[in-house]
Length: 494
Image (tube, rainbow, N blue to C red):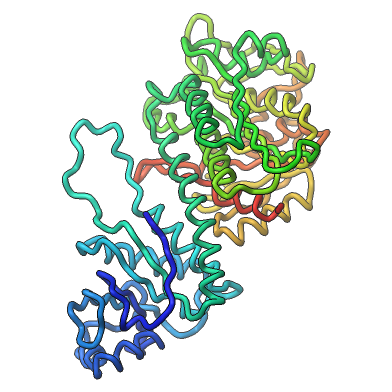
């Protein structure tokens, strides 16, 4: 999908579909009034017939409107003239896309920056519009033997800007949106690739490919023998039951002098999670190909960072393993020693994400990071707590949490902070080791974050639990979250 901006009179724009808004009670937007004047009242006469009310979600497609150069005119409902909220604007764009998709238009000019949105400007609207278009038009057909003959024809979207100043802002937004959309697509493609193909080795190859395509990135992969030498007993315990070797993948983006401390992002990369000996129920187990969506989001964010050529240093780390039951698999009751020297009693082998992450979070201390953010489909409990809309946020530093909240507001990639009070640490007590890997049914997401907090005391750290937001079961697929959030956070650091 190609995104561009355009100024000038929409009446003279040669495009296959011009999109303009109509407010509730058939009130024309300013752009629609201009088009109506050029058409000598044709548009208002059509609207008076009652086919278009202006309510959000309504639409009317007109062909060969007199006085307008565009082949088609799509009128979309803007609702009342009061300021929209973010969700309403997103729904407006989604509704517009659904109407454009049923036409045969290959390109479109959107004149939808007029509605007011609380606290948001033309740049924000343009970026959101482009990201929503890219996300909605996405499809994953790589695995189909027979490709669908019918595909959406729309491949270029232009956005109307009122003047040159606004156009400059829109252009900057579209550059960011294109990079983020590319990163989200990369994350979704990796997340949707089935586990018989997307193994830890496959993730390593994709990370090396990203480095080959971007001179600012170098990729290093640690093998099991390297991790054993470093004492990563927790990470290695997860893949013991699998024929697929575990990997620790490090992608190093250099956009600033080497002396500048890097920002580090870490993503859980469990290529398939059977639960191990603590076997999951069969129903829904197919969704466990998405247990590496944290890793996918790291690769997608590194792609966006390189595309934007951000003047900072960023290191993306993926601890990758496959969690399977076998005669060699870890068992409930096993005790493993982590790279930090702390020991963990594995009471449940299905709580494996925290085991691969804890060694990765110890390893990255060598980089002396400015901040560390880990991303993981860590707990089903987060969906019980927050539902499917926000990602769960945990942090040991208020400034970092506030920076992430600011990035969430700017990117519309929502988060909600939960506590990691010391009180919860008591649930992780073990009689035989320094800690257990689970803390019981109460506050499952919090105790999982508290477990990770024991390995992150030397730096500013945040944990994003995306078990409810990294993928959806219906419709089935990876979402690419939180690539927009992470990328915005890193843009803000510049």
